[in-house]
Image (tube, rainbow, N blue to C red):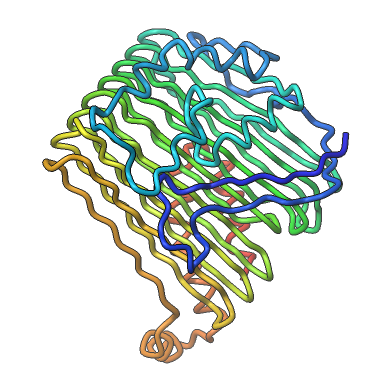
Length: 389
């Protein structure tokens, strides 16, 4: 089937002055071909983990609807904050980084979800692997739900790849639920071809002492959007995120990560490392949202961006929203080019400027690639990075 996409995505939780045009993003594409509607078969599914395939998107969402009052526990503060945008996503049982328009796209097209369930107390040692190997001209729209029951742990790697010269469409929605004491490790690697349009939407919730860890590498595709919204709805929950990105040529990347901290003693760490080259564009939104009742919570977001051309466009919007006094929130961004002093030092060691850039790109992104718990995929990603400059 062919689709015309016209969606508003990656909306900030609270609007700000829009002179940088970072309050949201648009996906507007005509004639998108979508043929693949099923998640590829998962590899290495261990005992204690069940996979239910072909569940309707709406039916899979009932898992979250059953816990909706716990996930969106009332913050207890009357009134609506200035610029608050949460009402637009009220229909979502679990909020996602890209928002309600992605969910509507899934529902309109009858997309099914594969549901991965780690049973209570099961802690898997090896990662489950889902490989998307797309051909030139292919379009894919799929969904997954990952559910870790009480005191369980599950690791899922999702690898999206194609030939470097290929083009097509790839859209994905992944929803997560970590119950009491449970942990979900989600790793996503994207090395799609230079003609692909790609989006990756993540939403999740943690119950008491639960944890969600996300590792994401956005390295390919012509146009990419990615979002992640994690709701730390109960006490002593944790969200750790490590992102890496590389944007080159005239490609673009748009990011929206939100940590909704509702429980007491929640902990968030969001690290972002990226490289912009040629005439690339990137927008990063990272929000720590301390709701009333999140006392003794900590949040830290840091972005480190290397600019390898004077023609790139970089937009960074780190945000802290706060309704609670007893919290600790930090954010920062380091954005710059290779300094002349550093280049002079490297040149004096017999390394030319092009090789110096390659080494700096590799060093920055390898620190994220090393977090991939599968040697084959980690090596493939590291090789891709090494050949890009």
